[in-house]
Image (tube, rainbow, N blue to C red):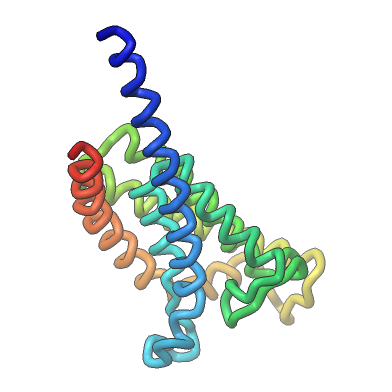
Length: 202
């Protein structure tokens, strides 16, 4: 009886690890689609500002996979793109993406998923999920926008009269979309997390 009791946790851990890697790969693929959603659905481009689903999927990865596997999934996505696969926005890829002013947003997805996962590991209520999603959205904007400003100032050709304030003004058009999608991700993620927990317990 004692031997059986010690085997169960190990078996459960192995199953969860395998599922975690599978889900990580799945979210890396979803990020590739989310980066180029306007290519598949051109109607989702408003006034020249592309509406992507990358922030949505990065947040959802943290909500459903937790901090560890959520961060792994975003790291895999970034690594695939840097290796040369056309998985970034506008079907771009390659190591040169690191010097792009928008690379900070790609890098931020790792932190978004990790922080979101950490929050819901401590608070798994609906409110906790929504708060985690909004915090993840804020982290995405903070890292991405500051990277963009630094890139334009240090190595990219900054537009005339470019300032830190202008960098944030550029981020205003997609902000309402990302806030709404983050709230939806929180609500949807909470329901999906319950379903996944139920299935794993069967």
